[in-house]
Length: 326
Ligand code: UT7
Image 1 (cartoon, protein in one colour):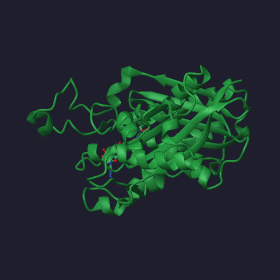
Image 2 (spheres, helix red, strand yellow):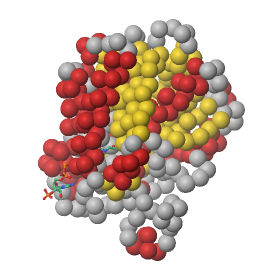
Image 3 (tube, helix red, strand yellow):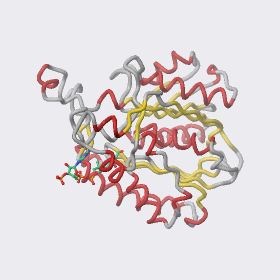
Image 4 (cartoon, helix red, strand yellow):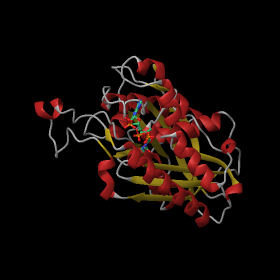
């Protein structure tokens, strides 16, 4: 059966580190609170001059080099982001220019933290229908530029980064076995950025009212996330006729260590089979899964024929999972 296979990955995070201790100096919070409630110890913050496409470019170059592919061979670029360079054109088109990948079709998708798995699902469908053969998918965010650094309930959570993967057709047993993507727009106001769009076009008033920053109802989001992800991972295994013990590695979206632990517990998967790097990067939204996947691969945590389960939950609301046989 024809399916898409990940043939290379790359990731990039800015060098600038912001620790919990650094944030203690800016707002009323503590390393102890952040560590206990989220698992985050530090996050990466882009320099003023670094923009979303720059991070996407760095991660993409690593993946392309790993596979020894000329950018001209790429026929589709999908960038998952909610913090693009500008409202339009798409960050994917800007990345296409930076890579000189002039034979590619390029577009963005907006599915927040679930964006990379959404991109994977779209790429998989296109590959299965023979529409594209060499697809570059990227999850990238510079959420630091959209954070209200006077709001302790959000600014401690997010970080910047990018992760990329190349997907190609596979006739073998290995590749993406299934993807599962969902949305519930009725809960859009749990996590959102109100300003600068058609609803609240930029004005002095929108700026004075701090509408250009991320708003989140954290505790409500937490509860929905835990319940939704528990059901999602169980369903993903069921569809693939797999038992939890057959999963070699769970790669969850890194939003909150407590959510990750709850999901693993529901599946009965021990934490040594769960990839966690939230302590280093915080929540990098669409970049979180591809950065984790790239790190897991480069740390030798994934071997041929392993079953890998990816899952994510984010603004929209959106949620998504993928089951991969490596
Ligand atoms: O990636 C997209 C999906 N996102 C998520 O899944 C995020 C889900 N939400 C969460 O991760 C958690 O809800 C948070 C980490 C955001 C918050 O943790 P929580 O345990 O839900 O805390 P809370 O919002 O219920 O707040 C508890 C207390 C409050 O004080 P009072 O009202 O009890 O006196 C907050 O004001 O903690 C206070 N608080 C803080 N204290 C110190 C909130 N933020 C901070 C802070 N430092 N940074």
